[in-house]
Image (cartoon, rainbow, N blue to C red; front, side, top):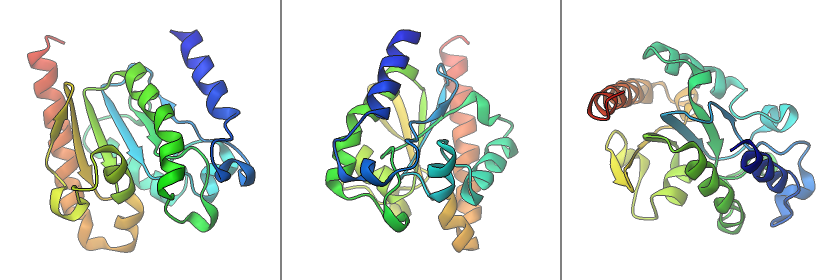
Length: 190
């Protein structure tokens, strides 16, 4: 499997499918356990991520790590990726064409990791993973199953930093994810 990952990372690193690659410092493919039961998908890299080539390393990433740990898990046991692998200018949301250019990479990552649960962090992740009919505020905390994978929308950690009233619902979502993973491990004999 390592060769497949190396090929995928090389393809992401040399990608020129959209204009985002022209201004990036580093591509940010994703990181974590390649056999993770839990995967997080965010919007796209910010300035810190572009600088380091790693997802969720700024203030929002620090909060995400604390939230993962608060429900008894470890960040390194998860896989973390984004809809787009290059930083959009001024941290704007990725345009539809940019997201569409990167989605084959994300689908390949999901297929290789084979997570049981995917947490969709924010509106961009929800839109490009579940579709236009889903909304974070309305659908957060509810699981949608697709091909045996349970996906849950919740607020992006950056939104929690801007609006503290969203922290309690996000905390409830993370506890539900933990509980779903436990139930799945029981039902799947692990």
